[in-house]
Image 1 (cartoon, protein in one colour):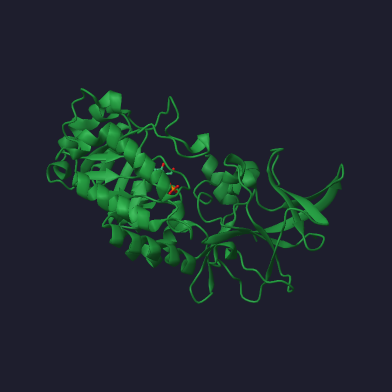
Image 2: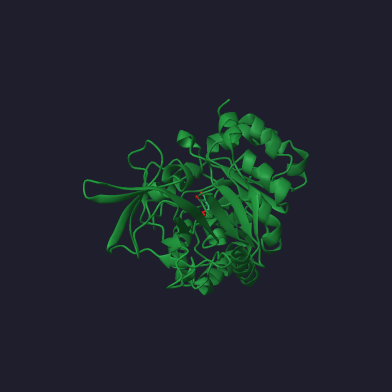
Amino acid sequence: MAAFVISIAALKRNTALLRETADAAGCKIVLALKGFACWKAFPHFRDDLDGCCASGLWEALLARDYFGKHVVTYSPGYQEEEIRQLCEFTHHLDFNSLSQWFRFREMVMAHPRFKSGELQCGLRINPQCSTGSTPLYDPCVPGSRLGITADQLESADLTGLSGLHFHTLCEQNSDDLEKTLAAVDEKFGLLLHSPQFTYLNMGGGHWITKPFYDRERLIRLVREAREKYDVEVWLEPGEAAAIHTGVLRATVIDVFESAGHRLAILDISATGHMPDVLEMPYRPEVFLAGESSKFQAPGSNNDRPAVTFEGETYVPASETGDHLYRLGCPTCLAGDVIGDYAFPRPLETGDVLIFDDMAHYTMVKTTTFNGVPHPAIVLQHEDGRLETIREFDYADFRDRLS
Ligand SMILES: Cc1ncc(COP(=O)(O)O)c(C=O)c1O
């Protein structure tokens, strides 16, 4: 059976590192639910984080109901009913445009939670400083709809606001944060120095839990910002919390040849279950389960094995070799292909493949396109025990459609 298998031990390793970083920097770190929202895992690492970052009402409700602590909400576009509900429980409410803030500020500022200081409002700013390499993930491209540029704020009435929020990074190190902070200072420094602004949210995209990430620099930058502007600093990573914490287990359901290519059809779909493989795009690592010769656990490229199944061994696939297969999926989309992988022996129907690093930006994005069954969700506990927390059936597919 296809399944996302999430390792509690690996999650805890990541969140412990995030806690350590937050403590050293003196900032708050919240989990971006857009990246990982498997709420049944929350109790295992809740103590390490300060709350959740939500992309709108539904994620905010999930944060309130299953995580607790702080709820930090930002959406590129709110509707009135969302604001009405969010005012009841979110702690930060960050707006993407001045028009949204002007539309809702009267309602928000009249709320008792705003008056008591329990609810604070901020603006997402666009420092117009591109440091990443993938335009799809760059909110600073000219004409970006994400965030307010400095020129728009020049003579605006900012009464009622106390926070600024930027999110410009994606899988990046702290040197890029340093460049971004220089741009933020140049364009928005005056605002940040004013006592009206009491929090600065530095968004996500910080690859904090990667072995090569320069945490010392991050800690220095956060401390400097806190001191310079006298603000509370918030970070909202998604990927850094869930990276290398889970795999997607799939089964080969057909093997055949076409025009000189060997093809294997799996019981999972790239577009349906791991869309970043097509969108980013990127090439996940694949392992063939059940071979006893060479042992390498998924995740070991990061020195942190993620999921190990008792008694199972895994052989990594490589780019070239005798037994090269194009791994494809059971949907009508011609491009629903994961990539070409070489295995140590010919693939057979029934072989089990493990795709590494499939905890983040997967389960939060899945669909039942073409009616392909959704993989189950399994937690691997610290003692190795596997607990299936969700299985999907025809009724799940049917009921989503009407
Ligand atoms: C506003 C905002 N905050 C946080 C994140 C989380 O980013 P990441 O998962 O790369 O850390 C994102 C991701 O797109 C985002 O848009």
